[in-house]
Every structure is written in C-alpha cells, then in structure tokens.
Length: 277
Ligand SMILES: NC(=O)c1ccc[n+]([C@@H]2O[C@H](COP(=O)([O-])OP(=O)(O)OC[C@H]3O[C@@H](n4cnc5c(N)ncnc54)[C@H](OP(=O)(O)O)[C@@H]3O)[C@@H](O)[C@H]2O)c1
Image (cartoon, rainbow, N blue to C red; front, top):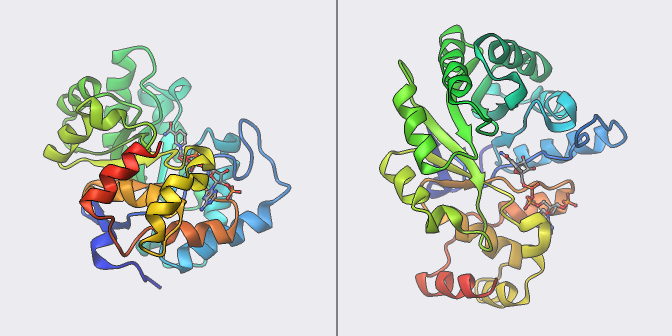
C-alpha cells in the first residue's frame, strides 16, 4: 500500500508519516455536519490512503464531529497501524475532565484510538491548558491517544507546555505555514522545533488553493515537470521536520498533492519560490 519514497516519510513521535497528508476542514461540513457528499468524501480519503497518504488531520470541531465520522468510515477498510490519525480538542472542552471526555468522544466517532491529539488553539487561561495537557498524558496511558501535541502555539507557549509535561513529550505543533505566510521561519518557531525534534504540521499550505494558481510557481515547477501546487507543498516538506496537510475534496487534487513528494526543489529555486508570492 505504501508508495511514498523513504525520504518523504517523516517522523512524528516514533512513527513514520507521509510528508503530505490530508486535511479535512470542510469535508463533512464546517461548524455543522453536512452529509450531502459523504460517499464521495469517503472515496476521496480512501484514494489518498491507497496512494500512500497515511496522515489524516481532523478535529472534533470539524462539522461538529462529522469529519471524524467520515475519517472513521474511510479508514475502516485499511490496516489501522499503517495510518496516523490526528484530531484535536477545542478550547471549550479544555480542563481535565472535559478534555478526557472530548477525546473519548473523538475516538468513538473515529471508531479507533487517536494517534496524535492536539490542543486546537491556546485558549485563554494557562491553568486550563496545563490541566488539558495532563489529561492528554493520562489518555496516552489509557490507550485512547498515542501522542500529545498542540496547535497554534508560539515558541513561548510551546516551551511552557513542554515544561508542564510530566511523563510524555509534545511531539508536534500544527500551525499555519505556507509559502505566503512564513511566520514560523520569521519568528524562530521552526528553528526551535527542529532543535527540539518536534514535528511542524503545516496547515493551509496552499492558502486555500490560491498557491495552486500562481504563474511564477508554475514556471519554477515546469523545470521539474511539476505544478504550482506541487512546488508550494515541496517548499514546505523540504524541511526534515515539516509535513503539510492540504485539504482536497477531489481525487485529482489528492493525486496532484501527493506528487509534491519524491523530488526536491533546488536551493536556488526554493529562494525564487519565496519571491513568487
Ligand atoms: N489546526 C488548525 O487550527 C487548523 C486551521 C486551519 C486548517 N487546518 C487543517 O489544515 C487543512 C488544510 O488547510 P485549509 O483547508 O485551510 O487550506 P488549504 O489546504 O491550503 O486549501 C484547501 C483548498 O485548496 C484546494 N486544493 C487542494 N489541492 C489542490 C490542488 N492540487 N490544486 C488546486 N486546488 C487545490 C481545495 O479544493 P478542493 O476541496 O476542491 O480539492 C480547497 O479549496 C484543513 O483542512 C485542516 O485539516 C488546521
């Protein structure tokens, strides 16, 4: 099943994941469930898995849980151990008891354990973040989740969260990162995470599809027989600890995104790509 070249299998915790994964925001609804395309979405996700995308990102917030249900349906026919499922707890469910309840509900909707469970946003009170991190450590011990991570955390908050952990480590931080929005590079977050061996999961890596239609990136891609979207994604996964999770609701987009793996932009073209956006 697994067709991804070795160098595009990245490390999260002790696991190997494809450098390009699949995001699911909007697949199955945004703030509310939308069941109108369920069959089609399950097919698209299954297609992605078949061509080697083993990292799937979802959240309790997406479609008010329906995205998790669709991911659960999609993965049910595959070898679970080959897949890496990410989900997230929304800040309204922060706190020890609420976070544990939310994780169990996510696992129920997915029909399986969660590989990586993230605090979706920092929320407002440190105490709640700390309690939630401790709940996630207990959930690891109980086998509901396998790894603990955060999302949308800056360097200071990430470091503070690392210090709050008692038995497990924070293995990933999911943040917005694209060729157009390179704040993790500019702020020093990416370098910090490299030093700490923390995976950066880059969300909105195509800037909602607009980086798939950039003539300057297309021109660079032409030299490699690749498209604008593939250049935009290759830029991200060039870094050892970065994986990208574009959302694609169509099989042809999933395939195109998978084609961002298996090759590398030259250093010079990477610099040029920065100037395209
Ligand atoms: N942790 C967080 O706070 C957070 C926040 C935002 C997003 N995320 C995660 O990150 C994922 C990705 O981010 P995103 O959905 O905001 O934006 P994105 O992946 O940058 O863009 C998605 C859009 O790009 C289009 N697209 C995908 N592949 C394409 C291709 N090869 N050519 C042309 N268009 C293409 C999709 O169209 P089609 O659907 O028609 O294929 C969709 O309209 C989300 O789905 C979610 O899982 C996490």
